[in-house]
Image 1: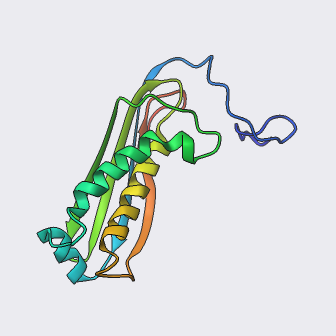
Image 2 (image 1 turned 60 degrees about the vertical axis):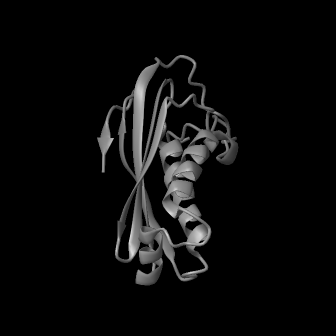
Length: 155
């Protein structure tokens, strides 16, 4: 069916069988952005948000989310992650997150990196929403993937 690996010959959803694939080192990098008021960004930067250290909590949330991706996304394989990092770039009116997931396995970690970035952004929103309810989350995308049968890819 048009090369969609999550569909069988009859068009029914299925989990892809990766048992014949070689175990290789795999890595994926995803990013996302949340735009906000200058006051909200300043409060985050200065550690003045009443709920606590926004970026520290968002980092932990992103890492935890990557570890739970298979519970959230149907047909995703549970993956033994060897590393997840979540980093932030804060400017006067926004936060950009970059999440990197790594494993040695039979399937890629793109979904884990994307999930980490998205949940980190949602956590920033949740912790700072009292300061700015009009924040906008967007531009979540895969930046790069390495390893596996399809090889390396960079946006």
